[in-house]
Image 1 (tube, rainbow, N blue to C red):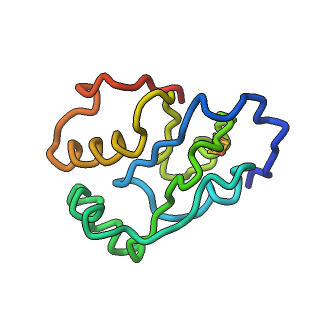
Image 2 (tube, helix red, strand yellow; image 1 turned 90 degrees about the horizontal axis):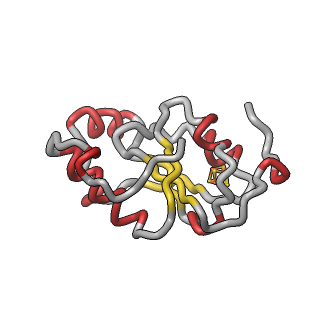
Length: 128
Ligand code: SF4
């Protein structure tokens, strides 16, 4: 397991934010453990969030008690990438700030549920 290393987060906060793929997250909490800035918490998916999941995502979420990671303090992210490396489900990406990350996350989940491609959004540039 990776240790929390604030020294590895040289960037100022606010450049990037973590985006969590709701169809991949299994609440294994590695992101919670490794983030030096306590960006993540584990919460229970709400009804609207469950509806936005793909069929596979719903099955996965059901078997994990609908628990998932949420970037509740995304503005504290220092862009170190530890959470991206630590997530065993490859559910986290860092995206540039300058737009509404939560809106994008919800929009992306809805589009995935419909089978549309994220590439068509063209709003963000993936960093990791
Ligand atoms: S990149 Fe991940 S681990 Fe590093 S500060 Fe941001 S949210 Fe925390």
